[in-house]
Length: 213
Ligand SMILES: *[C@@H]1O[C@H](CO)[C@@H](O)[C@H](O)[C@H]1NC(C)=O
Ligand SMILES: *[C@@H]1O[C@H](CO)[C@@H](O)[C@H](O)[C@H]1NC(C)=O
Ligand SMILES: *[C@@H]1O[C@H](CO)[C@@H](O)[C@H](O)[C@H]1NC(C)=O
Ligand SMILES: *[C@@H]1O[C@H](CO)[C@@H](O)[C@H](O)[C@H]1NC(C)=O
Image (tube, rainbow, N blue to C red; front, side, top):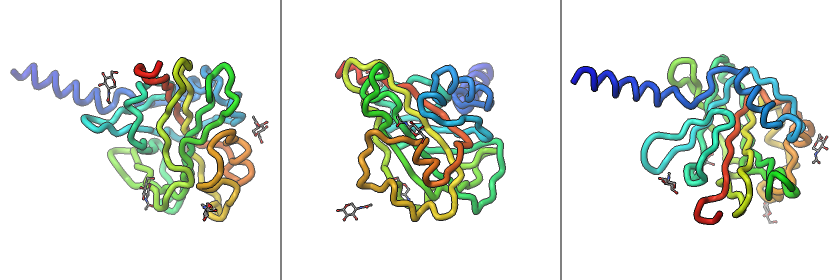
C-alpha cells in the first residue's frame, strides 16, 4: 500500500518535471541540431529557459522540451509560456513569437515563415519555485494558429522565441492583424522594430493529422 503511494507520488513528481528543459545548453544544442538559427537567420544564445505548455481539453498540459514531436491534436489550445532561472524586473515586458519554418513542406518552404503567434506586453508573475508565468496584458498582434501541416508533409519545425520588448513596440505598424501571416521573417521584423536577439526559445515538431495523411 505504502509502496503504491510512493510510486504514484514519484510518478506525479516525474510528470511535473519531465518534459521541460532544465539547461540552456540543451536548448541551444537542440536548436543547432535542427538548424534553426541558420534557417531563421537568428542569433540564438539564450539566457533564460522559455517553458511552453499546451493545455489539454482533458488531463494535464503537455510540457514542451526543445525538439519534442507532438501529435497535432495536442496543439489545439493556445500554449502558455513561463520563464525560469532569471529574475526580471516586474516592469520588464516581453514579446513572444511562434513561427513555422517549414511551410508548406521542409523540402520546399516557399511560404515560410508562417506567423503562428505574435504578441507583446507579456510580463512575469511569480509562480512555483524559480518559475515565472508570462501573462499578456493586451490582445496578441497575431492570434495563435494551430499547426496544420498539409497531408503528406514531413513534420514542421514550429519555433517559439522570447524577446525583451523595446520601448515604443506598441506603436509599430510593420505587422498588424491585417498583415499576411505567410512569408513572415522574424529576423527582419526583430531588427526593424528593435527586438534584438531572442533571449529564450523552444520548438516543437508537428506532422499532419493521421486522418489527413
Ligand atoms: C489524438 O489522437 C490520437 C489518435 O489519433 C488519440 O490516441 C489521442 O487521444 C488524441 N489526443 C487528443 C488530445 O485528442
Ligand atoms: C491575452 O491573450 C488571450 C489570448 O490571445 C486573450 O484572449 C486575452 O484577452 C488577452 N488578455 C488581455 C488582457 O488582453
Ligand atoms: C484592418 O483593416 C480593417 C479594414 O481596412 C481596418 O478597419 C482595421 O482597423 C485594420 N486593423 C488593423 C489592426 O490594422
Ligand atoms: C530575413 O531577414 C534577414 C535579416 O533582415 C535577411 O538576411 C534574410 O535574407 C531574410 N530572409 C528571407 C527569406 O527573406
